Length: 352
Image 1 (cartoon, helix red, strand yellow):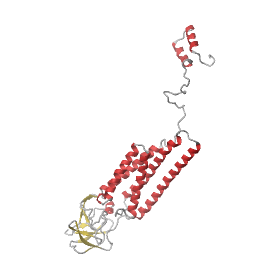
Image 2 (cartoon, rainbow, N blue to C red):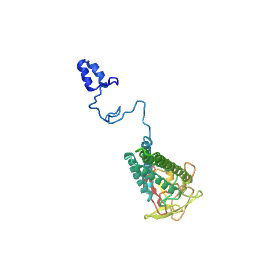
Image 3 (cartoon, rainbow, N blue to C red):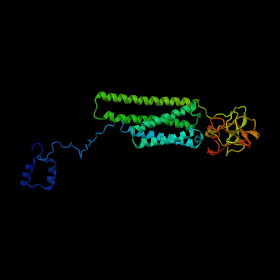
Image 4 (cartoon, one colour):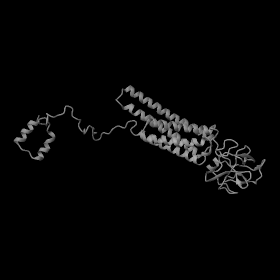
């Protein structure tokens, strides 16, 4: 035993009785003493404390799939979904709330997207990530339908806010879908040390799903690009050569309409010589362009002003005229008394 560098408890006691040892020397000998009577049959591994294994210096744990990618993907996807919700809320408050069906759908989109984003952040659930990805893709699909063929009688126009929301929804779908895939693949690939064939199958399935997510994202971007390229920007409400103004009775009030019977509006901040509705405002409130001609019942003063781009805009009794994209059919006046785009909007009455 002495040759092995350790002594038994009985030998230790005998040595201590015969030759007293200083406290410092006893402390140095302490690590070499092995008590064979109380030795555990299965001692903890070297470096283990309270059941936790310590890593040797210089050794680092390998980063496995899902260790860091999935949390950041989940957070990024949730933030993108939240930004998309905020854009839809802004659009709802600045014009879409007066559009039948579409208006409250924008509000529902904001609420659902906000709840899903919070769920993806708080619950760390794969189901929440899948739901968020599916919702982002469905929202993008609804936008593409509205741009190309119309939705619930409303045809969307091309705006910077709409383009931004579409791109953000594609990114939100991709990140949340990947987060869901990694969440599902991580434990399956590492638990219980499965056989090599099973591990290979899991890796192949994950690669297939990731490829599918990428393919869907690319396809969505391509369709989005085609839809935006073919969409109208600032639609003209009348022919360039001239526009005939008419009257119609809506809600017991005789109002001014264009040749197709759509209600015409005036913008409170405008002056008899200047239109204050430009840029994105003109996308939601298309100006009536061309020289106006009086139709039946039109008795006010007709004239034109020059818009910032040089286009002639029709005026009635000194009020520049506009239509509203929220009116999907003649006889509607959804834009009346709305406080949007920097001021109030009113239907133009035939009496002036």
